[in-house]
Image (cartoon, rainbow, N blue to C red; front, side):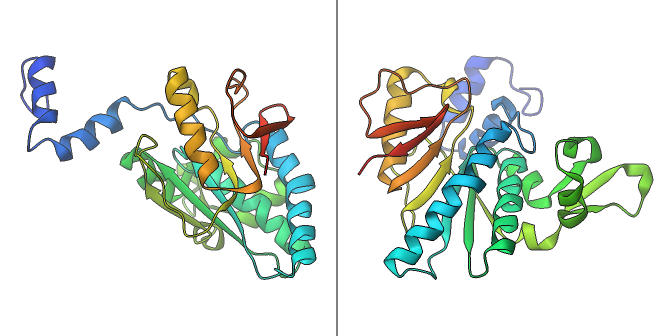
Length: 240
């Protein structure tokens, strides 16, 4: 309101909904969205991914003669990028041990502000406290100006993640290929039950049969009639 010299929320509301309000709507969403995230947040998910999901994927590709097929994962609600870059580290580690393994990471968020920060991939050094020393040495660059106490993700990892703006409330999502895994953690808690079920059904439409859905530890699908089987806490698998 101060920026636009508008006197009331009612007047601002009318402005956002007006013909000239499209750009302002993006600014408003940047201001009100919640963007809490960390590297290796809920680490059991990444352990399960590397120890169970990826070996399983490799075995299925070998069995079906699809050795060239990349593993496709979507970080929905990626915020400032810590989650997709964590995925990039985990998948890169697996690729190092499994020649020929390839992957694609799509990361989306509603907020253009956090997406710009994610693309920049610069973080305060204390943000990477939960990253192992081996991964820090391999995947993080320290600023030449040590007074800034900043790190940056290495170019190879930055190029491994595709960032784009996406509103989860859009009628449908389009992906060129079905996804092998979706990470949507601590996002659906902000929606009512009907909206949660609608969103989960949209996720299932773009997920491979037997694909995995990772939710946050405060989220549950209990009471929903969905083709999902609980594998471990907050990790679910689409049933064929």
